[in-house]
Length: 156
Image 1 (cartoon, rainbow, N blue to C red):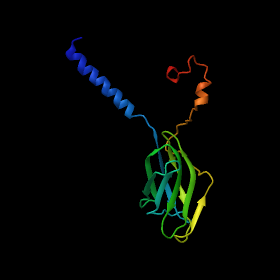
Image 2: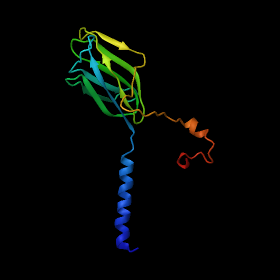
Image 3: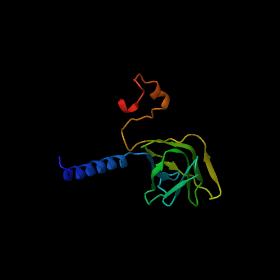
């Protein structure tokens, strides 16, 4: 193979490898619908997802259908807060996001003043309704206990 043909081929293979690396998913997504006690959707609700470890925040507003989406969340534990004037503030702590998850958190806000706040410390009922896929996280201790010579996950 001549040098003139080898260089473009090598460049093309390098670019394909880069595109594959960019396609890896290391983020999560949170979405859902906000309603009032009667079941009517609530527009204009501010949704804030604050990372527990770093304090970094991502926010969104519900649209006229009461739907919100926060894409590209780094994985980790978050506190998610829902607030709007005329409604009680709802707060969910320790909401865990794993790699590639698309979680749904539907919230019902109670009527009340902006000063009142409802704090929900229990784990939120998260639903991955965007996919029928079943997945799980394999921890390092599970990988180390695999009966594979050398315990190299790439050889699986």
